[in-house]
Amino acid sequence: MAKASSQFVCQDCGSITPRWAGKCEGCGEWNSIIEEAVPEAAPKGVSPKGGRKIAFVGLDGESDKAPRRTTGIAELDRVLGGGLVKGSAVLVGGDPGIGKSTLLLQAAAALSKTARVAYVSGEEAVDQIRMRAARLGLSKSNVALASATNVRDILATLDANDAPDLAVIDSIQTMYVDQLDSAPGTVAQVRSSASELIRLAKRRGTAVILVGHVTKEGAIAGPRVLEHMVDTVLYFEGERGHQFRILRAVKNRFGPTDEIGVFEMTERGLAEVANPSALFLAERRGEVSGAAVFAGMEGTRPVLVEIQALVSPTSYGTPRRAVVGWDSGRLAMVLAVLETRCGLAFGAADVYLNVAGGLRIAEPAADLAVASALVSALTDTPVPNETVVFGEIGLSGEVRAVGQTEARLKEAAKLGFTKAFAPARGKRAVNVAGMAPVEMRLLTDLVKALGTPPPGPKRQTAPVRAV
Image 1 (cartoon, helix red, strand yellow):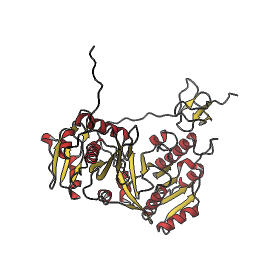
Image 2 (cartoon, one colour):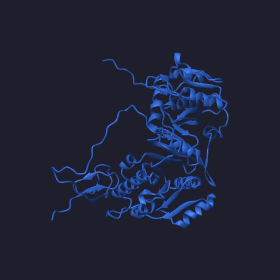
Image 3 (cartoon, one colour):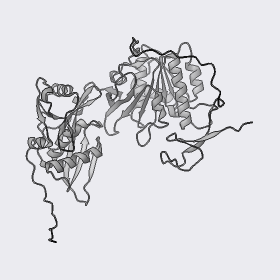
Image 4 (cartoon, helix red, strand yellow):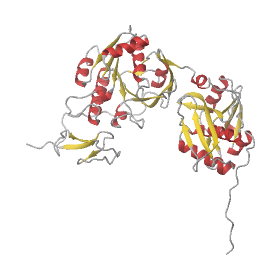
């Protein structure tokens, strides 16, 4: 009898090694490698039987649009690209307690008015979910509720003629396939459980939403292949100290990526924010030095947010650089350009940068707004109160053009702004009623627009000795 072959798989990153080791060479984690059986393959030289030829078609042709079902929550539908697609698989990740289960319970209750909805929880008992539903005022909703973790039992229940239109699985890390010996949450279990549930979604046309845990680095726990298996990946972002929650699409086969939905955490659950720009700027206090309003784009939605900077004398040998909501490496680059190309001195000062409201910005168009806030804080010169700022900064000190200028300016005009510090557009200038763009070609143009800064400390150089 042939000996069953096995392989050793890291339960954190999914790397496969021929033998056991205490430390994974792929991710560096200790004691994360376990032995798993290798599925039997066809004998060498023998081709699988029963296959049939596939038919190829051309790129040009008519295709039916994927039918969608709206959830009743406009911000969620926006991120999904217009609603849930029949037979799609959606993965939702986020920090513990951020509101994933609350949002999906609200979506299930809203969708249950027009469709069959099943909610399967592997983390909470039925009574706990009922208590949350009562707190949210959703007790009368027609949602089929169950607490289970065995994937075989779940498939036997959902794989019927009256299969639900939506099935929520909370969470995929608690599910297990009883044919495998590994514990729930391991790479093999997460991969197999997700594969079985996705196969059900495609076969029955049921939209499946999988809730995923995240690691301390913020990535969804389990094998990376999990994000490739599903159709849509959503991340739920936010800080515990802020009431705002951001639902961001990082992958979507049926709609745009980097689209966001904004929610506010209230006593009655998550409330939609139809105009996030007004909410992010609600606590803005007039002309204060070190603050600039950035006109950004999140997917197809223009969003205005305040960027705050503080420059203070340092009491340490090495100045401190603290960033919240932006890339610290990009801040270091902007500071270097300001010092080298504009003659400003930040080397003897601590620099603190914050994106107000808990939003995280990733696009390079925020460079000019960050530079405005830094220059304003250093010179104690407020940025004009009615001005928005956007533009990318190059290492030579030039201000580069960014996309969707018209959408940014229209959003700013809608909120009462009348001026914009923006990159020069040349012949492609965009005219928006009520807005007067001030073109910035070089970073020195921004410094001049905000006033002349005080001279920085002179650098001391050693005397040159004659040879």
